[in-house]
Amino acid sequence: KLHAPERRRTWGTEPRYLLSGLAFCGRCNDNKTKVYTSYYRRSPRTLVTGEHREYEPKRLYACIEHKHLSRNAEPVDDFINALVLGRLTREDARDLFTPPDEKEINRDSLRIERIAVQVRLDGLAALFADGVLDGDGVREQSARLRGRLNEIDGLLAPAPSNPGREIVEAQDVTAAWYALDIARQRLILNELMSVTLMPSKRGAKGFDPSLITISWKS
Image 1 (cartoon, one colour):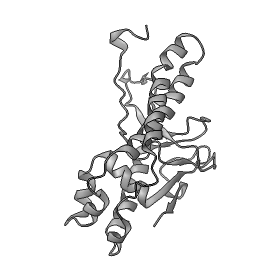
Image 2: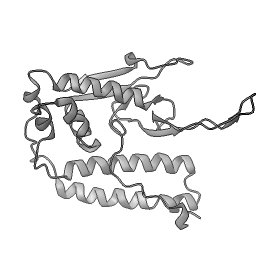
Image 3: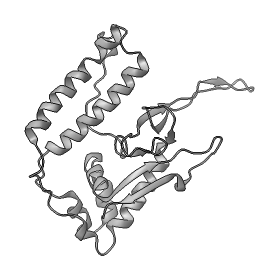
Image 4: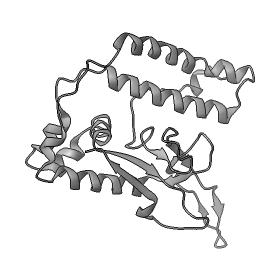
C-alpha cells in the first residue's frame, strides 16, 4: 500500500515556508528544538439550517518533537516579514551583509552526512511497514530529516551572489523582498535574526506578537 502509485507524493527538500525548521520552540527553550509546518482541518459539519460546511486546512507552525506548541502560521509570517523589511530599509542595512566565509565549511563531511540523511529518509516507509514507527513517528522523523537536508543543501550551495546585499540596494526593497523565493528569504532571515515561538495561554484567541521572541544577530 505504501508504494502504490496513487499514494505516491513528491515531497522534495526545498523549503516552502519562511520559518519551518528555522524558528525555535519557546516551550522546549533549549535553543535546539525547532518548529515545522503542520496542518489542521476542522471536521465538516451540517448546520441547523441544513447547510453542509467544509473547512479549509489551516497551516500551523508546530513543535513536533513534543507536540505541545502550535501557532497559526500566516500571521506569524506577516509579522516576521514586517520586521525584516523594517531592518532592511534602515540606513545601515548595507553593512549587515558581507561575503560568506566558506573556509570553515567541511564540504566532504557535509556530502557524506547528506547521503546518510537521505538513506534514513528513504527508509521511513520500511520502518512504518515493519511496525518500528507509527504514523506520528514517521511524520516527526520525516520533518526532522527534511529540515536537516535543507540545512546541508544551504551550506553546500554555491554563493555567486549576495541576496541580502541585492535587496538592500534595490530601489524598492519591499518589492524586491517579496520577489525572492522562499529559500533566499530564509537565508537573509537567518543572517538577521533568531526567532522563537512562545506558547500561548489556554483558550487565547487571535494573534499576539508578544509571543514571538526575536534575537537580532547584527
